[in-house]
Image (cartoon, rainbow, N blue to C red; front, top):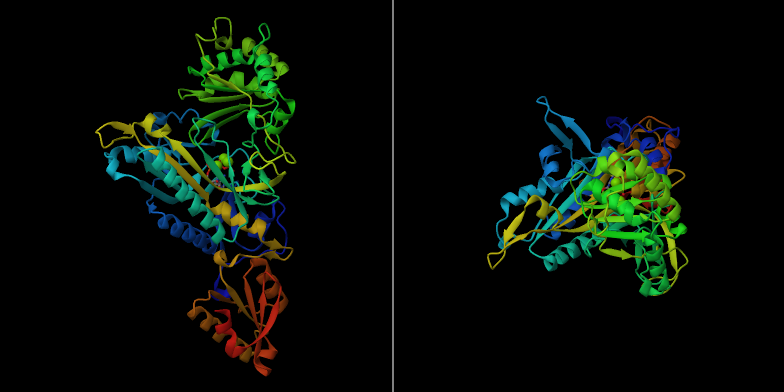
Length: 563
Ligand code: ATP
Ligand code: MG
Ligand code: MG
Ligand code: MG
């Protein structure tokens, strides 16, 4: 393409609204424009990058036996009522009505649609495994859309769902996806780490997040300096057996169950009543520093985190105001879905407040008639302790370090969570009916583009990894008035394209300085400058964006050398 025929609206000024470098550069280099908060138009250069990332993703999914399909963005409320998530997903779900006043939502994820699809299509164990994926726009009405493409309200995701006959087969699918994700992010030229993440602690199911290491990352991870241990700080725990004072567990238990003191058990009872569910797991914490850890980062201290971790509902209560909110809000919020795991910060002061509020505000919140063990049954009370930077690695005892990460992907063993609720079953070889064992696997395609810039830039602009660069090279005639230069530049441009080097010709009548600045800003890996020397001495300047190295190459050899 010739730049005079392209839409590349570069900006000299740094846009005021942009905080992180990828947002600034995507705007300045003419890749994106905002349509609404967290909603963007991808201009042609961005679309080329996205296409490359999608192609890498497709190739790696297909290599593992993935099959691409396309599911609807608009999803009927019935599906979400059936899974129970219509009432728990909260304000992140974009809801809308059709002309007949029927409820719909814009898909933030597609477990409902695909599980219901497979309920209708899979009868026998012989039809599995199935790995199905799509690359599709997703919609989440994020509380704080920010950082440009990093946290949008409309964004592009690849989501794959695996369907297997049993846990062992799921393990195989999960490993395949782990490998595929590793390949995808390697091929995109990113520095990343797969880290253990918090799955909401149900039944040993596991999950990994793929984190691109960058200062602007919203997640904190701990990694070992010696071995491959890496975990989201929310997950990095050391069990009492792994070096923690064994009395800690006891103490934690005692503190929360002291008779006479309003205890976490009572709060659990309240939550249990409010949700109509038996609370299966309670994890009590008494360490104030852990409270701080739970609320660290940019997460608001007073935020109650009622989070649907891909279906595994986790309720994290952190900080006293959070518990106030929780006790008031949970009743109206949780609805009919099983509350499987409550992680509660059981500081006695906090508990006292919580009880005061719960007892005073809401009719259904009184504890008067609650009978622990009759109305609820905390099956598991355990102590976990978050590990911090500088402490020994739980695996090899070397020192742990903390880093910031951008979550570009996550893989997750769902088990039978959705298939049981939605009745997606199959017959095994003995003719026995069983729920399908599922996994889900997401990659933030548009976020990956932003993350690549966070890792690859300098004061002059973007430095694209070659595999995802919008073009490989730009050819710049120094003088647009010099016919010989223009002709030679045009010839090189054509030959490069013919030999598979995606090349742009900057044929604008701008000063060379302006063209060089734009070339650096946009981040073409190679800049080929055709100036006076090209005509007089037969050499062109080939400049590498990443290394800053410039070489003089004979005209006749340029195409060959670049290829
Ligand atoms: P986050 O923790 O950043 O909110 P998530 O855990 O909610 O992300 P998932 O449900 O795991 O996200 O979705 C899969 C992938 O989609 C994420 O790993 C991320 O790369 C991407 N993604 C999620 N939310 C957004 C968003 N608002 N904007 C852009 N990409 C997103
Ligand atoms: Mg999220
Ligand atoms: Mg996340
Ligand atoms: Mg995630």
